[in-house]
Amino acid sequence: MPTYIQSRLHDAITVFGRFLRQAGCQIGTGEIMSAIEASSKINLSNREDFRHALKTCFITNHKMIPLFDQLFNLYWRNPDKIERVSDILRKLNESRLSKAELSSMKDQVKELYNKQLENFNEKEGDEDGEEKQFDVFLYSPQEILREKRFDAYTNEEYDEAKEFISRWMWKFGERKLRRLQKGRKPYRLDIRNTIRNNIFPAQDFIALDWKDRKTKQRPLVVLTDISGSMDHYTRILLHFIFTVHSINKYLEAFTFGTRLTRITHYLRKKDANDALEFVNESVQDWSGGTKIGETLETFNRMWARRVLNGGAVVLIISDGWDTGNIDLLSKEADRLHRSCHRLIWLNPNLGYEDFQPLSQGLLAIQPHVDEFLPIHNLNSLTDLLNHLSNLGKRNTFKALA
Image 1 (cartoon, rainbow, N blue to C red):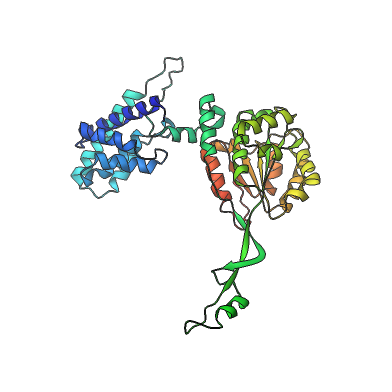
Image 2 (image 1 turned 30 degrees about the horizontal axis):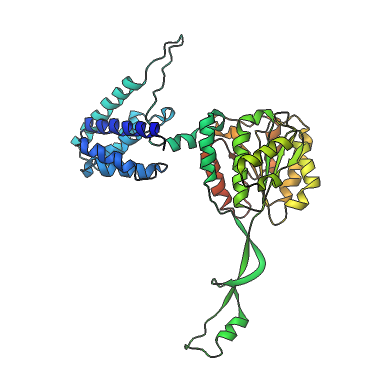
């Protein structure tokens, strides 16, 4: 962890200790130093580990645990997710404290909450007079990075995200083959081995041998939109595809804007930067328009039979802004959907709470897609990989319906 971030975290833990002391917890310098030391021994990317580490160092009376939990959520939060006092008091009411203790804690929480708002929510000196949300000390720099949108990354955050993605190791969903292998589960009796192993039995019962179906990793096909509207996401998503290719050798990757370009062979480079440099030189339609229908037509005609064997899963990464033929898009999306095991549309705009699928491209392709998922930050990428590792039978799901 960089020194400036570590120093900021230590300061935040110190302030949080004083925050708890004002609430009535018996906390001194020793407890704060223990909490700082404990933070250096754990994985800060896990919120619950951090919570339990601070709770162990700061809380000596079990009756203070409900108050600690509420103040932890109040202090270590994002500015746009501030809990209201009513929510805190409701949760306190659910605890098993006495009425006197509850009443005292309610007053303390109200007072502390108001103090925090006075200290941190400073008003901007602009004409609108809007309140400026305070910059709360967040419990983990890694969590900030994982929750931040790709289009808001700085160059330094982009490099950190690339390093974070490069450390991923995932197992993708598998499909069962018709061929059999030796197994432990009673799928099919292995008569030959059962007879051979029981010619001279060493026990009174017959030991049965079984066969089970072999498994193979599902092929993955990724079509990435590189048009102008996807500029802020292209770099990090291509690095993500490079990382997935290093894990799943059955991955086929394409880019599209106004034409379709296969980039799988460039991803075989050992270094991600070299691979992306070759991709940048070979692709001719960067930051242009988007013709998704024409792109899918080319893919279905030239590549579908080659790369969709074995129950492949197809990922289309695009915001859905299409300048091509909408009728052609609907036709080719339906054809692609019937050719693959599952068709998943990944849209960075789904990360916005108020997003509505109003573009003609999205409305045309929506009936032919199994799932619509967001892909706007690192957390959404993690959710996607977890989802791909647990793929089961086809189950149509329309998140935008």
